[in-house]
Image (tube, rainbow, N blue to C red):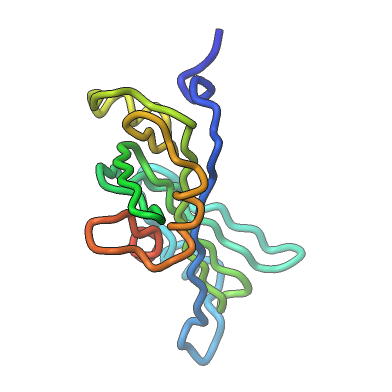
Length: 155
């Protein structure tokens, strides 16, 4: 039996990483790093001290219902969830990421939110996904009303 996560074969995977240095004189210790990355109260921050200090936040889901960035005038609307998380390395380098994957085709109408919540990180297009137009569109800056992974990562 296939789980809901396996029910859609992804033809596109996309993500964005935003990186910055923390503006502090001293690197954050593991306790401060865990406090900084506690994005959800129901899950712990993963912390490792060897071979280097590294902390990883729990995943957060952002529900989206918007157009995807597509080149050539293609209009692609998708609904689903984007996964975001943050990582801190050596108490100084902060990286925030947001990503999703998309199947070649989706339903012709919107499903209840429960359908999308059991598929974290999957955006289902309405109809057929124009893979090439979408791949090219993602490489440019998003237009107004289009999915903006960088803003979700920084959120």
